[in-house]
Length: 184
Image (cartoon, rainbow, N blue to C red; front, side, top):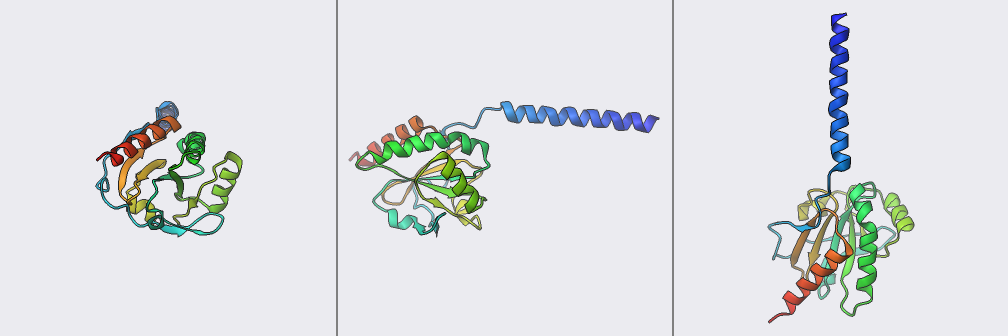
């Protein structure tokens, strides 16, 4: 009788802790839009050369002369899914500009089929670069998706953003970085 009472109390206590943790996860605010420090800031971006979902190959070194935004993504990541419409709007806005930014998704620990299905359903006509062994994420020091990196036309890392981004925030940051680079 005593052992069953203890077991019941332990089960109740465990359930309460798990429920509290779940409530915390559901109600917690995302890390938000913020630039975070990295030793890569101001240095050449790591090499990125990898297959693209649907065929072809992406090589970051061949993008010199263009601003490139790398967004690390997983189709099951809730914040990634939440920010996706913002990235679609950002890419649409950039595609109408003369010197628009190139948006590239780096697939983090996900299958090509799942990523293709997600983009088919939710839009987004930009390269989806595979990272099958995680080497790209490790080279950039990606802690958790979503994470967004801005590479300038010379191939240098200019910004790292942890958490979800919005079209407005990313557009404003890009305009700021482009002004800084253009200033004498």
